[in-house]
Image (cartoon, rainbow, N blue to C red; front, side, top):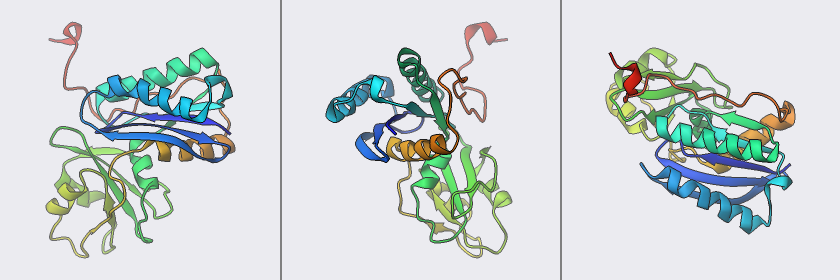
Length: 226
C-alpha cells in the first residue's frame, strides 16, 4: 500500500512515504519552532520525488501526541485536510510509540521519555516487543520510578531520557540508555501505520484520530480565562 505519514508534534518535523510495503522518500528536521512553515514543503518534495499524487495513496498517518499543543494541531489539521481533499482515511500513531518502535531495547522493557516543555515529562513503558505496559503519562522525572518494574534493567529512550537517568541515578539495577532516535520520525510512523492499516483497515469516512493531550495547554484562550 501507499501511505503518507507526517509528524510535527515534538521537537522535530518530518514527512515520509510508505510505497508498495517499503520505505519511500523521507524528510526529517530537528526544530523547536516553525513546523508549520516546513511541513508542507517537505510533503511536496517527497511526493514529487516519488512521482505520486494523493490519488495514489491509501491513507494518511499522523502523530497524535503527546507533545507540543501547536505542533499536534498543525499535524492533525494537515492530515485531516489531505484526507478530506483526497477521500482518504487517517491513521493515528502516538509520539511515544513512534520513538519506541525505532529502538533496539536489547530484550529489556523500554521507557520512552519525551519533552513537555515544562517540569513534567511524557512517558510510557513498553515491552521489548513494543507492547504497551503502561498508559501514556505525564509526571516528574523522579516519579518515573513508580511505574518501572522492580529489580529489572529498563532501557530508556527519548529526548528526556537523560533527565530520567539523572533523577534515578541511584536505581539498582541502573537504567540502560539507548542510542536510537530520541524524537519521532514520520518514516517510523509510516511503518507502524501501514502495519496497523493492513490488520485493521480504516474507512475513508471514519472519524479522524483525536489529539492525545496529557495536560491542559499553557496558554488559555481569552474566553476561558477567569
